[in-house]
Image 1 (tube, one colour):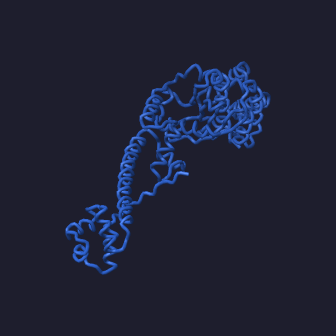
Image 2 (cartoon, helix red, strand yellow):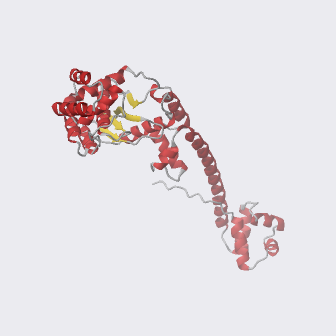
Image 3 (cartoon, rainbow, N blue to C red):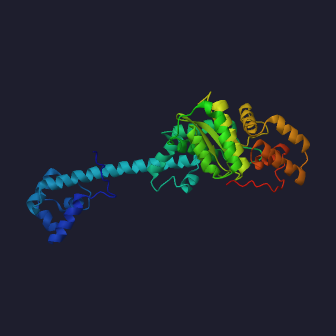
Length: 368
């Protein structure tokens, strides 16, 4: 096994040892210089660590002090190696400081630190960033950030101040956390079974988050809850990780209907898009304008259809375009019971369809 070389904070020169030895023996430098036939100035330079111990000097010290010449030669060689190692370490440290100063411009390091992902070691922190972003150099990191910033979902919203660096950092962390997860083999034919089990879970509303993970993992889908970063209004994210599709949610809105819809939305991406294109990824975030991509609309319709057929919804909505607390809410509960879904899911969709999120309701939207 290779032993890591110890690098002292400061190299010890053999002149320091000689000075200590002379003091311990009560020998004055001038007298000692005469004893070994050396100019006092040369001896002073040696003691002040300005001159190296040569083979000739080592032999003189051996004769005068009884300390073997090879001890002095080894000490001198060790001193020179330590000096070289210290110089190399300082160069490496300077390089690491320069790299870290660039990293801080492209990575939300303060957030990673709060999450306990970084330590007091600059070298370890740089290695951790390389791992999270799946790169091995500052050039590749800058390239990755620059490429992703041009993607639609990283651009600034007109309504919200989206932080591109934070959004990318969050998505990279999601991928990094998903990578080591082990779940069952994914079978595309399990779609209807997954939807049915999730609908039942959401309706009962018990241990929803942990049970969602159990259901998805059972059918070969990785699942992660990762709190969103500041100025990153993300609801969900779906992508392929190793041999399995992956769904990540932020719980941005800690409501059952929002959670259920987000999971189904990302599930729509899995079955509608990711199976055909494992290199794709879909970040559910507010877009810079009112329009969204065709694929987002498809995932949106998928989620809606999972809970209630469009014709049934249209019939309900046509009767309740204007919200009436008693009658509309009563119809929502009736429809939910008929379709065997939680009433908050009806209420959440109604708010979305009407664009009115300030409606008050007695329907419990709490996620349990």
